[in-house]
Length: 224
Ligand code: ADP
Ligand code: 5GP
Image 1: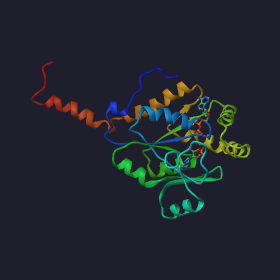
Image 2: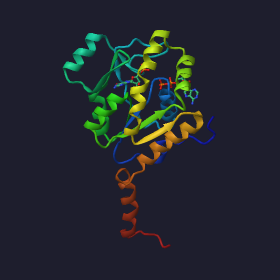
Image 3: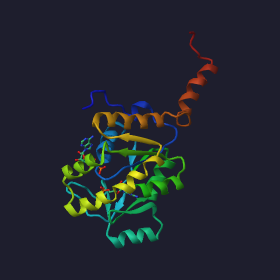
């Protein structure tokens, strides 16, 4: 449980330029949990709603959690070049729609993608400046336990998800940051710290520096 006062990028002042964040990790590691907590603290960050051919889970809302498409609907969009990246994960297709991401970046807004390792590689090609964060479980056994506890998947789907854990985990060293999601409050703090630090990089904060430096030249400089 976190005790500190929530920090908002609105309070922090919006950076001059948006950043593109990619969050990846095996299914059940806690990505959605960490992202939900982050988004409540950084409301200025835009979550990219992916398209998928998998059916909605209980409580998932079309357009908020995913754009749930038929196989044909997905294929048509793919044909039209609407995806920034896409992959087949656990026998289902998933893809990031290009238009909303590009619009947000052009408007100076930061965007977060929750995508798998194959997708993260494609985004790195398209946006070499993206920031990639890998969420690692404390152990493979803990990961399986979390998937079972979540209780959203049948035994067959669970087995399929576990069979692709290797591919996801082996991609971890390619990333810029790793967050070990063992104790949730620790992982939340580390995860949020990465975003706050990245949004504080000089190229994204030039305006704040220039504003204060301009005071040094202004006629109304108050006496020290
Ligand atoms: P993902 O989005 O990566 O598939 P979820 O966020 O749905 O994973 O988390 C999977 C399950 O693990 C959920 O039931 C969630 O409440 C639980 N969980 C997340 N983080 C932790 C943690 N640090 N310790 C124990 N359980 C966790
Ligand atoms: P889930 O079915 O549990 O929501 O997601 C399964 C996996 O698909 C997760 O690893 C998630 O990160 C990945 N995923 C979700 N959306 C996308 C996407 O748009 N592109 C890619 N490549 N992977 C995605």
